[in-house]
Each structure stands twice: as structure tokens, then as C-alpha cells.
Image (cartoon, rainbow, N blue to C red):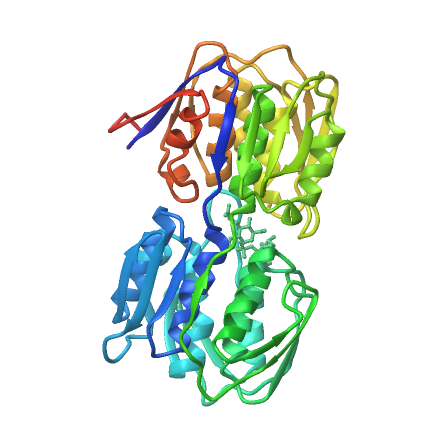
Length: 420
Ligand code: EPZ
């Protein structure tokens, strides 16, 4: 397994380009199952999760050319409407094929995603919604077996905002007969982006990105040609990295309009953030101050930025109270940061960070995608060398992170085949 080795102490200065949004590209690639024609998706990041999705679509019998930033998906004969455990265990988001496959083929077998490091990750809302559209669902031997005739539009109220749950139901409803209303939807920009693509395919989706959506289903949908939005979490991660090193960085292509909650907290902490030349410029000239953060569904503070902001707070003056409300176990970065000299006390879903003067380099273990990124960010300022192991987690969601960081001055390298 590869590791990333960082020697701390270098200010980041220069421009970091933002890649396309992983969590927009994944559902959109699954939406290609809704049409027979050849669809093209552009600005796709080169990530493991994209490769996994391409491999799953090929396994199903689709004709895929995965050459980021361009991915095309077309048909090559009959589709096998199955997503085996071998794929789903690599990437939970494979469950996003459930809605399109069911709507299109009426009979699917998809492995239950199971949990992961950050939580149990249930899919009950996905299944409840599909049953409301007329599907019969059975769970057996770790698989979801779903069958239906033509899905019929219905009103569905989610118990809580779920990003992939909303997306699965949007795709199913796009081929259902009649009108579907989704209430208590996830409002993330990636959900809104999927709505744009489904409309390009001929569906009529109103309200994507808000808490209520209306979808008029069609008998069939057209292929699309679409360029995906920039990745707000990647952008936010590099904004924090710039602030951490007290650097001066233009995060080029950063979607400021999707980062309002993060930007508000960074400014409150004393980070200078300004819109500049189609991106976001980040500088720190004063002392950083501790801020309190509670994660929430969009437009609240994103859970996917919690670890990165906590890392920044380890060197801020005073205390920060960070509360994680979305996932039940998303503090795995805490013990690793503590080994680097941070002062953090965890009480259930709340972490109290007390700022320290400096961090020390150490060998640390990546556990989940965003925790891995936060450890690399910590290594940028820690004294000496930090080695982040098991960076396959990082490669799932960050395109060429070490290249992007070294180009703005970081002393960082990838160590091939390091011990796990
Ligand atoms: C999406 O996961 C993202 N993944 C996650 O990003 C992100 O952290 C998460 O949304 C929250 O923003 C993709 O988009 C591929 P949820 P998802 O369903 O859809 C509960 C990353 O780092 N819930 O919005 O799986 C669930 O337990 C990844 O890129 C149910 O109870 O998350 C959680 O507490 C990590 N039943 C809450 O809802 C359900 O049927 C939100 O989960 C579905 C969800």
C-alpha cells in the first residue's frame, strides 16, 4: 500500500486547480443506465471511485470508456442488472445503480452496502422510497432483490435528508409513470447537478437542490453530454491547507457559492477569504482563533469538511467545540492528530479542541477519505516528517493530491508500496 510522506514547515503559495466533483460524477454515471444512447461526462476527476463505477457499469454490460476527464457510457447489448458485493464493498455509492436499474429493467439484485469506518450507513430510506413507487423488495443473504412493473409516481417523505437516497429516488422517478413528489430532500449541490442532467435527458425535475422536488417521469430518456461541477470538498480541503500553512493560495475554480458555511467559519477563525479570478483566494495574516462548528445537511457545515476544520483548529488560539451530527463515528482522525501533539477531548459526538503552539510529525494511519486528507494537512505544518499510511483512502476522493500540493511549495512525496 502507498504512503504519503510530508515534511512540514513550508508555506503554500500559488494556485491549486480544483477537479470535478466526485459526489456529482458518481450518481451521474449511474444515471447513464436510464438511457440506451452513448452519454458523455466531462470534467470527471481521475479517482479510484470513478474507476470502480466504470468497472461496475462494464460488468453490467455497458460500453464504457473511462479516460478522465472524459468518461463515455453507451450500450453494448443486454444489461445484467446486478451489483455484486465485490463492487459494493469497494464503494458504498454503488448502491446508486439501484434506482436506475429498477426503473429500467424491473428486476435488480444489488448487494447491501453495509457499513464503513464512519458509520452503519443504512439504506432504509432508499428502499422505502422505491416501495412507494411500486417496487417489491426482499433482503436476503446480504442482497437487495427488487422487482416491479412500470414504477408509478408517488409522494415520498424522507425521514431525514439523505444525499444518495434522494439521488436514487430522482433517477427511479425519472422513468416512473406520472408525477413524483420528494419531500425532505437533501439539498447538496451534487443533488442539484443530478437534476440538471436528468432534465437534459428529457425528464422534468423541478426543485432539485431544495427540500421539495417534483419529477414528471418519461417513457424513455435520452443520453447526455455534460461537464460536471467543481468539487467543493476538495476545494475546501485546499483552502484549509492554505490557512494551516499561513500561506497565500488561489484555489482555482472553487465554487464559492457551494461553500458558504465553510467560508463563514474560516472568516470567523481569522482566515482571509476572497473571490478572485473565478476562484477563491485564501490568506492568513493574523492569529487564528478557535471557532465552534456543528455539522449539518447542506447548506449547513458539511460533515465532509469536519476533519479538515478540526485540524486547522488544533493550532488556533483558544478552544473549539466541534459536533458531528451526521455520522456516528467520524472522529477517527482524533487519535492520530493527538499522536501529532494536538489537544483534543472527545465526549460522544462532540470534540473539544484546545489550540497548541505546534504539531510534531509522526507515522499516522488513514481510516476514511476525509480523515486521510486532514492528516496530510496536519503534516504540512508539523515539525519533521509525517508519513500517512493506507492512502488508498485518499486516492478515492482526491486527484493527484501530492502533485497539487507540491506545485505550491509543499515538501511532499508518495512512497510506493510502503507497509500498511
Ligand atoms: C453522501 O453519503 C456522500 N457520498 C458522503 O460523502 C457524505 O458524507 C454524505 O452524503 C453526507 O453529506 C456520496 O455522495 C457518494 P446520507 P450518503 O445518506 O448519501 C442516514 C465522502 O467523503 N441515513 O446523506 O451515504 C445516514 O446514516 C462521502 O465523499 C439513514 O438513516 O449519506 C446518515 O446519518 C463520505 N437511512 C444520514 O442519513 C438511509 O436510508 C446522512 O446520510 C440513508 C441515510
